[in-house]
Image (cartoon, rainbow over all chains, first blue to last red):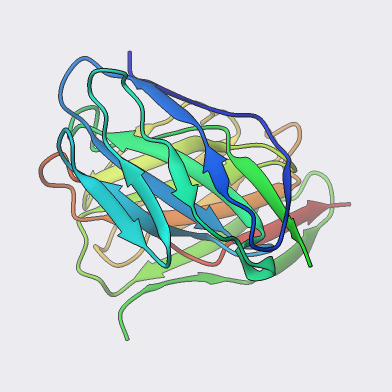
Length: 113
Length: 114
């Protein structure tokens, strides 16, 4: 079945550092890939998405490229801010199984001033 | 503004009592979902519904029940059979068409059973 694996946290960085959060997936078809972000005490919100191979999703300085050959969708940001501290979830959907989305376990990011 | 509302934000109940969590959306989405999130954990799917008057069990449905009588509403009841109900509950919705299934989430309800 489909699955998503992302790097364990927490990840602790200083402000303005470069961020990478690794995400790999297993899927039988051609899924769409997503990154969601959850700020403390809130629900998840979509950060970015990519719907086909080699697509790059981007938003608020974050980027991720859909790599079919390595089944990966790593999240990157060139210079993190304290306000980026949150939990980040990688996810996939392929339109099957009742339109369910498969989520990774989440990676907590702490950014220090 | 379109979105998903969940109420209440915090809920306290005594052990052995049933409790119902509200979820309403005005996005005109067909599909709705309930997830449970425990501290430091990812999301676990409880129930989902693709259309009015139909719903399916997710990965951890035991001790929970749902109804979908209206497109906009998908309430979740946590019954006394749920052994460890204290958690953060998230409701979500999506268009339910095609493989680009972007989900929209509510702000969550934190349930504490005393």
